[in-house]
Length: 354
Image (cartoon, rainbow, N blue to C red; front, side, top):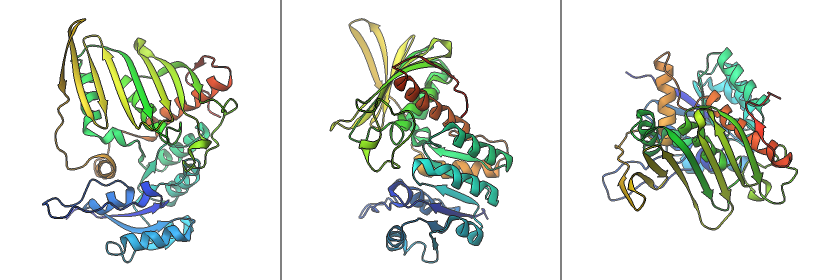
């Protein structure tokens, strides 16, 4: 018999607790989970035993949406009380960006076995370091939910790069557009893909933020609810091994994102819509083929949960989106703020911890 892991969730936002509509009339059982709660619902080794939110109305909505699945789940407005009463194995943190640190440290010190935390890891390096230190000191795996790191298309693109099929990486261009193209809330997903594909560390960058954010030197959003409180951004990054990367986002009605990786002998284009491998026969003739990926039992949020369980059951196994990986992404974001407020100056990396 496989072990069942007791899980709790704090933060009943959409990404925390949204329940998808189950398909009808076709032999498919359960859509790919769009939230932490739905991932625990679909994973055979987890049981959600408690949820927490400061808003009573969010707790009421959770009970309405999930009553048939978890009628006995405890509901709390006090996180510490939930930890004491439910003694969970795994904690999910899906609160506002700047609230992750205190909850993560508290959970690690309470005796939980693993933590799945929403992105970005935190909004300051000091907070990120506190989270990482507490988890490492207590032997608690910390996974940060940069979703595309568990997406077959993005993982296949990285496999091709690592295999050297297209030669060394030369440039990485990442674009993101939508009304919610905010730097911390949604931008972190796309910025995270730059070191993910570069497979090395950034050494310096220059950046420019949205007009009207000239003095935006530190996070001052509201957890992603109001896009007007967070800027979009553009940046140029230099990595080790000569890799050059460009990040560009804009708040537009046109939605979507795209990553283009140009190598010595070809190019990869990858997005949430799929991927292509492009080779050049000449300046006037390029050939393209669809990026071929398999079908997988666990992807995205569900894969994040399954990976945590695999790490717990296989000592020495590594997380694809660890706290230290997520800290690297946060450092890039904070360096972008420093460059902009300093007059678009070059900022060397790594940054000093606050």
